Image (cartoon, rainbow, N blue to C red; front, side, top):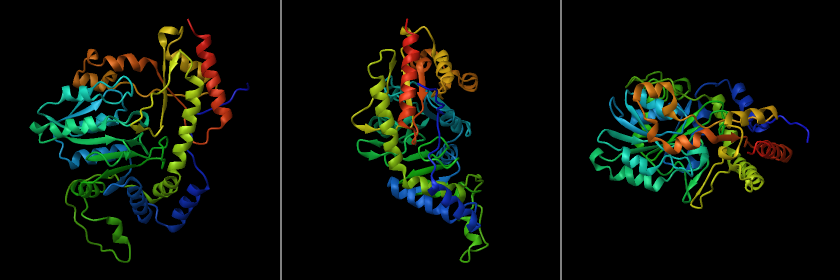
Amino acid sequence: MKKLNIPFHKPFITDDEIKEVVDTIKSGWWTTGPKAQQFEMEFNSYIGSKRSVVVNSWTAAAHLSLEAIGIKEGDEVIVPSITFTASAEIVCYFKAIPVIVDVDPVTLNISPSEIEKAVTKKTRAIIPVHYGGMPCDMDEIMEIAKKSSANGGLKVIEDAAHALPAYYKDKMIGRISDVTCFSFYVTKTLATGEGGMICTDDEEIADRCKVMRLHGISHDPWNRYTDEGSWYYEVISAGYKYNFTDIQAALGIAQLKKLDAMLEMRKAIAAKYDEAFKSCGLLEIPTRLNDRESAYHLYPIRLNLEKLKINRSQFINEIKNAGIGSSVHFIPLYRHPFYKNNFNPEIKNYPVSENEYPRLVSLPIFPGMTDEQIDYLSDRVLSILKSSEK
């Protein structure tokens, strides 16, 4: 079998995106304008939430959401151990405390039982992360939030950076909790290079996020430059520069139209991987749950290291030499110097993360992968593992 070069990710771009971007550039309106508004409305309609607010990153979306619910210095926000730093760093912006808890051994999503143990009188919010696109146990999480009467009820802000589109008990992610934040980073299931979206049914949260995303100005400032607009505006708070541009929105408008089709492509790739790997005792494939549907953003395998002569790093180097890109999602938060030095998490509190992290490897799963690439990757992975068996 000839060697192929397969990147970890490649955006699925066609002439549709190119035409939308060219149209935007020719229009002369490159920053936040009519296409950003169009994308915001079309995305909101797709999710089915009452309100959506588009911003320039997931981090901006979640930062604004925490600000809107009133997070303050000394407050506690519960986050999972296995996630990207953005899920926790936004808490630190307020001099609040990210309380890092362990994950479920099956899904690698935040563990409801660990959330329950971590709730104190200072807890104000929970940030569940839908790892790899597989929805968290949202019924249990929402119930924990609701019954925390000592806190006046906790707010739930979903990190859905991996979960577009995903479904929990037939309800689309984006319609379950107080706020859901999506990412449009270049590797995500809808890609605009950078970008994020806040979805909520709470009008006050949406209104606050809308004002704070661009300098705390009381109305959409780009309207000042239309024929119907006014030069007058008021700054009502010290806001941020988190706006989304029309050039980005052009990509989003085109990507949104093919979002369901791209999901089906990723599902088909995952099914082929499942079939190729299911009988191999040297790795574990992702678990599927009947009451929810993943967005298949990641395909994380877990190496059975006790049966192998190589470790995870050596395996990654082997497949890299075979031309295959990969990644690891994620280095647990409590292992990073910043969180160790500032919040003193104890490794003994994360037995699941400590067991699973050393054997996690994410394989390529992106729309546009060919059968030849999928077959080559599967063959190389199995060959490397079998040649490394104890």
